[in-house]
Image (cartoon, rainbow, N blue to C red):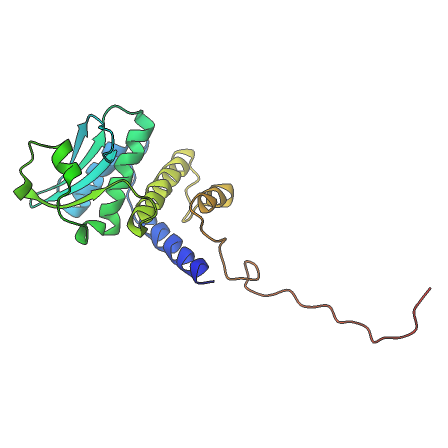
Length: 199
């Protein structure tokens, strides 16, 4: 029961965040991140790097002057797009405000970046952490909404099969309280008083 409630809260929070975003049409992750930087009034730099084994495929690095999204340059365009959106989602959700200090991955991937400049680092590694799961859901909802905008079918929330697919991917409970969408439990049929058995 508690997991259902927290899953619904997470879904509502992420959906609300994504509904309030300005998305370019046709959708492009770089253009979206430029819009996000403009809204926040703070530069977001995209930094492609060669992937190295045992390091995250994406990092969000916060410095005193800008946010930097580091992403694997040697992966598919679709994967790159999702990495960029996942890291941008950390900014949208405010995770960068409570993230840990500089990590070894940041030093390995960006050796030219002075450690003194780096304030916080979020690495795209463990999806079971609440912040990572939230960022992953926001990235997926952004892509879902962008697809609806391009089809001309954007509504406030993902509908029908889109919503069902995303909910199943993220283990979110079905919408609404127990007992169906209306929250009303079905009435029990009244039993007729016992009488002679009919033939």
